[in-house]
Image (cartoon, rainbow, N blue to C red; front, side, top):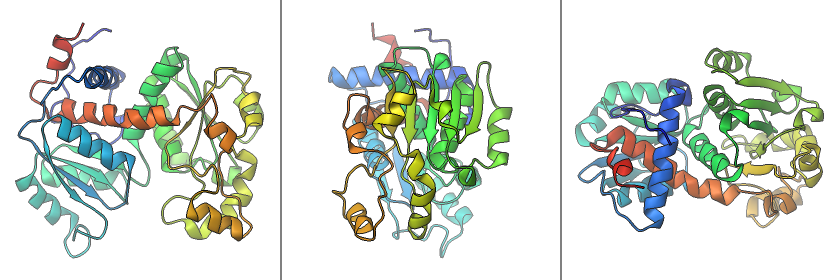
Length: 343
């Protein structure tokens, strides 16, 4: 790997659109090194003495565990403030809360409602690096983990990779993928019903940031699946949208990821990816409850989710390594030490 000097210390991680391809490449390389060191049981302590606030308005498993464990393994202390346990944006304005946090902490991991402007203002008023663990219109830490997984499992350069996102192409994962493919010169197809096509303004923003080789499109025609290297999907109703489930099932059932859909790619090595949690069976209380109402909310067949094309738990593990890389790159005093003693 080439490691041209890239200094990300003090930077926010709010959207992949904020980074040059070489900077994202640096984060991916750093994540791969940190992953190797962890598996070799080699401690780094690169965040020793740092204090990190995790401000979560939305619950989480992978994001919270990745931030907490990654920070702890690098020697940092973490305060977790979860849903309903803070006055942030309620009895206290974003600005007032952010200014207080800036007096206590060295960085903030945020996951919640709002848009890019929310995390931007949190960073502006706190004066700290802020890491976006999910907002209504983006999910950059997830895409970084997905890119690392593709490099590990697809065995081809990112710029030669075609990603097809199936389902609700207006959600934050579809938009985050659009941004990631634009920056890394990849091909991206949003495949879903016209009623849930991407916001034209978001599409235009991604196209304006597109690097050489990037190609972004929307289609409701299954022929767009041909040649895909990655089939990606997400649940059909995000947090706070449970009242739309019947409507979403009707619209999105034709775009469920099935073995037949994978076969349409014509790629025997196609990868199936999902940010999780996934509805792939009826073992969860929510899926069982919806089935009792006559609704099948599964966005992916169980045979696909558990099948040989699925890398969903590889990408879930890579959340730890890529989030750790973001924290180290933007907060540590000596991030390059990870590269210095690794052959």
